[in-house]
Image (cartoon, rainbow, N blue to C red; front, side, top):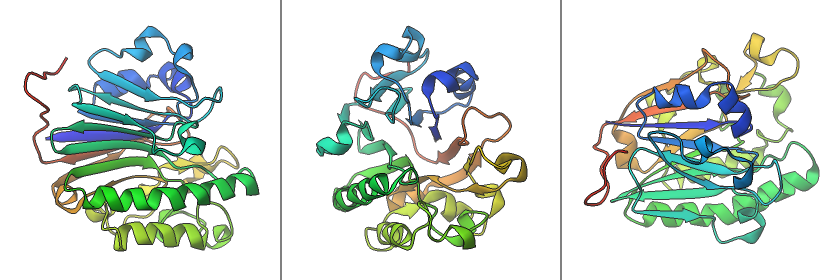
Length: 269
């Protein structure tokens, strides 16, 4: 059994101080995917750089206190890839991939466009660049899980106030159409939705810090795992952890019914 957890930390140092590492280490996850580190390597403590029980990899943004993704792996990967080959987004630390035999796990942080029209334009540029990469990955013959803060709620059931958000970043028609192409044309499977096709309020993973959104559960489902079809079919359980808050996002864990083994000689540390 392989458990994969994805979590937007809204700052690794903040989430660590709130107990995220201690919680993650107890979950039995083989891989933990992190987004929005908001730190450079020089900002991390030794414990963050080498968290006990994991091999850790980070792709940090050049800009201080911004974006960044990470992977914590119980087994050392055969190969790790940083970036998608586009300087604009690689400088922001948005893509990290680890390979284990025929399995690849990606941590991705899709830009948010909510702060300005300029950032929304950058988000659209990222989607345009990333879609062909997703098609290539789907055709590559590997089993893949992409864990991401996608910053897009795909359907009306994926956010509380969908009617009033149709002109807002994260639920724009163009963004939803893009996710539709990823799922329907490129062939990726939304694993949580496969397990819970009709879930509504319980599916949310992000809540604004404004207007008592958390207390009132006025949320969005922005964090999900997309997988190749055979791997998605092996998923047997999922959970969104809300008992403690490490961030404005909640961690999503999914269990896949497959062994987690890498190359010869690799062992859990």
